[in-house]
Image (tube, rainbow, N blue to C red; front, side, top):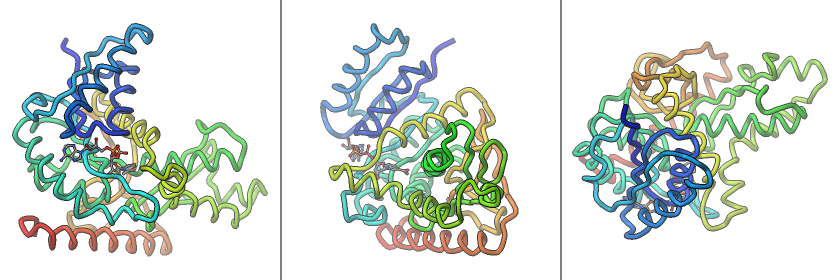
Length: 320
Ligand code: A3D
């Protein structure tokens, strides 16, 4: 059976890391696309040459032509610009919306059957715009943010409790921005909910609140340290987890920016919710019971996402 074809649109920091991870995990053959001439070709050649030492079987090709994406099974989009210190994700909207238009049209023309994972920021608005421009079914277009945000939450919790990250589960809802909703009630260590761990004296509410805030600011913390761009190792790993769930029909329950119509009282908006990802793409949106404060935080986050959609429609009236 032929290996899956994985198209990476954007061959920058995340794109290159995605290609390397796909090779190491032997998930499929990679086609790296970018508008910068030489960048995807150079990265593809470099990664291919790690093959003899790593012992993987996967082809790596770089291109500047959308036609080479034909027949891709999965498409991961990182094209656009990342933020620099002092910028919010929302400051990227003007440039990245134009990029989503050309990328969406390229996907529509050349790989309309792909499962598409968008990473470009501001995430919840860009995944919506990419879906609009590509015209693909909603369940085949999804945004990566919650897997990364919950991984950050899990990492900080594992440091606080001095336990393996493997035993920490975390739950994050809402948009990928300052209003994201890391849920303390639905996050656990080995199945023990965080409020119980506070009662058991493992941590204090104040420390937990600080970890929630550090999770919300997780991207900005790394931008502040790197100064030249944003995080790329963990974002790439998070998107690979989603791609693998689709390619291997794993039926993973992952927090993703998915199109939600009905659950949570939403009327067709992309926002971070728990979903099942399998061979059918987003197979199910999982609606959990929220308490009043969680509901209020989610509503605030949804309002922030809606504000971004209004801004997109003002920039590109064809989206209205
Ligand atoms: P970077 O290393 O700059 O790579 C972006 C690439 O996109 C560059 O190689 C550009 O040449 C290319 N590009 C620009 N315009 C186009 C176009 N029209 N068509 C094709 N390629 C184009 O950035 P990065 O890889 O660090 O980040 C990529 C995106 O991911 C940015 O928007 C970040 O803000 C975003 N990001 C999102 C998360 C989430 O959790 C959602 C995390 C980290 C970064």
